[in-house]
Structures are given as structure tokens and as C-alpha cells.
Length: 370
Ligand code: BGC
Image (cartoon, rainbow, N blue to C red; front, side, top):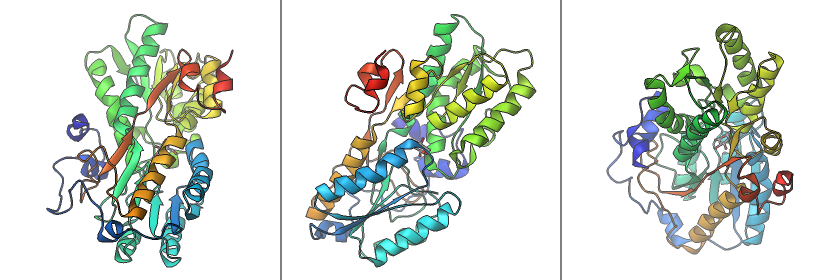
């Protein structure tokens, strides 16, 4: 994870601050324990736990809601699980968190709609002695985020970059390879980390001339996909094909997730071009089908069941007043503090290892039986 702290060149200002080891950091806030006094004291076993999720921009978020409801009930808690709406996303989530505090939640788990716009709400939570766990996406520029639980975002990017290179090489043994780059929404702190991880693998190949970004659009601001919306990726791909691929062949596209991968493939098909190597993330049903059909090249397995389970384990530790289990205390600087994190391991999936990767997934495993 050290690499992540150093590789800030491609990051936006906010995300650079979030990830840079040398960003401002108050003296008392970078400790590994990170627990609040309230957390250390514990709370009743049947307490209300708030879960504020962003809008349903990908299947993982849809799955998380139900898993939190079931898992928290099973652990003996009451739950209040809310999603931000599709259009008034930030305001919705701010209001939902405020309401959870009013309702007396004893811990709040947040998948941030916009990681930079929750400082007021998490301050109110801290004032009420309520610990906050950032789920999947980091919350930026506030001391009031106690823990972070996520799949290793930088590694996700590295795996995507490597899959893109491997996939292109398998199809056409020698370069140069023409590619285009897509990144996620700039209000999601993960987007820059995914991109940075991927670029740590792709940049040497670009520098050597083996890989060429034909459009020249390599800056994260040029590659961003507002709101993680499929239509935005599709229209950018349409424009890139028109402007840069009249005669040139497109060999690969770095896509940060499955929803955008499928939009990119739709665009390429509509232009009557052969489908390039396209990466993804999330193991969405339609993308796993596409991989098995030989269209999308890769995805990432970040089993939502395990991430939710880990978040609930953190809540149970807080409830008992126990020390919260973390495995990373250096990578996620949110601009104010290094947030103690529990990072899970993402797995790259291609057609080759899909059956093995989804062997324990009742929804996805049947799709791999051909
Ligand atoms: C998540 C991804 C997801 C994206 C869009 C990110 O923060 O980590 O898994 O594809 O949001 O919903």
C-alpha cells in the first residue's frame, strides 16, 4: 500500500490530499486505534444502527442494502438503511444521516454519495458520541470518521491495468496497442485511487510506446465519468471513436466498473467496430454473462457479502466496547487523519477463472457453467 501514498501524480487535488502521506494531518488524529470515547464505552446490544448508502449506481449498492438489513438483524441490532435518491443525491444523504442521529442510532455506516460533503453531518454524529464507519468509499476532510472498510481500491486499479495489458497481448502478441482510458465519478474518493492503481501498471507501457492513448486524454479530469452514469461513458466513447478512430484500431479500454464497461461496448458495437479488450469491476450479472459470451474481458470480484459482514463485525466490536479489528493504518489519509481501515482483497476475473472465482456465489456460479 506504500505505493499508493507515493503515486499521487494523476490524482485530483482533493483525492491527492486524501491519499498523500504528506498532506496535513493533526498530531493526535492518525492513531491506529482511532476509536472515540463513546465507541470505547460500547452500547446496548439491540441498538439502532444507521446505514446510509449512495444512489444505486451499481449492483453492489443494490445488494448491500438487503445484506445490511438481514445481517444487522441477525446480529441483534435494529437497522435504518437508506439510499440517496438518483437526482438529489448529496442532500438526500445529508438529511438521512441527520435523521439517523435524531432517531438515536448508536453507530452509522456510510457509503458516501459525495465523500467531500459530509463533514457537517459526521461532526453532528461525533457531537452525539456516535461512531462513523466509512463503507467502500472514504469520507474526506474531517476528523470524524472512525473507521474505513473497503476492498483494496489501489489493488483493484492495478488488477484492471494488468488485465488490460494481458488481454490485449493474448489477442495480438505484439504492440503497439491503441487504448482509451475511463475513470469514475470525481465526487467518489475511490475513482482516483482506482485510476492511479491502473496507471501505475499502464504508464510504463505508455512511456515505452508499447501502449498508445490515441486521443491523448490521459488526465483523470478528461477521463472522468460524472455520477458513474452509463450514458456519460457511452457518449464519451461515441465521441472518441469519431474523433480518434476513423482508421485506427482500438485494442483496449480501461473501464473502472462493469456498468461503464457495458456502455463502452454498446458504443463500440453501434459504431460497427470490433469489441476491444474492456476491463470492469463489481461482477455484475450482465457483465459476467458478457464475459462468458466473450465480449467484456474482465471484471473484479469484490463480494459484497464479505464487505457487509466486515462492516457489521466492526459494529459488533464497537457495541461490546472492544478494540476494532483493522489491518491497515497508513494508506487512507482523508486530508485530516489517517483513517484506520480494514481492507479486503479484490480478485480479478476473466472467462478463464470465472467458475472458480464464483464457486461460492449462488447467483453467479450458474452463469459460468457452459
Ligand atoms: C465502488 C465500485 C462501484 C462504483 C460505482 C465505487 O465507489 O467501489 O464498486 O462500481 O462506486 O457505483
